[in-house]
Image (tube, rainbow, N blue to C red; front, side, top):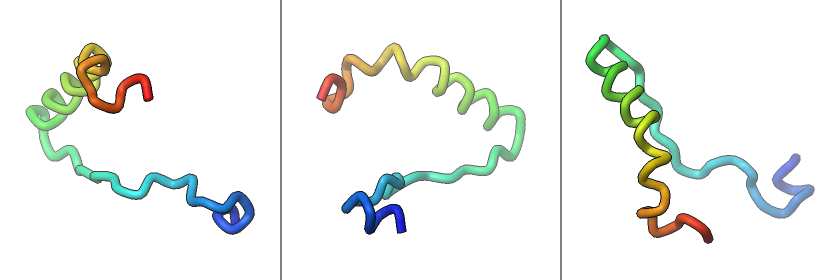
Length: 48
């Protein structure tokens, strides 16, 4: 109903789910989350 009212879908089209299975997986994902903002300016979509 929301999509029809506003004329577009506010929901993210593509996403990636991942189940954290062990400590190494958790550490890798946590590091990505912590380090990612430092890379924003290098992203081709930054500032659009």
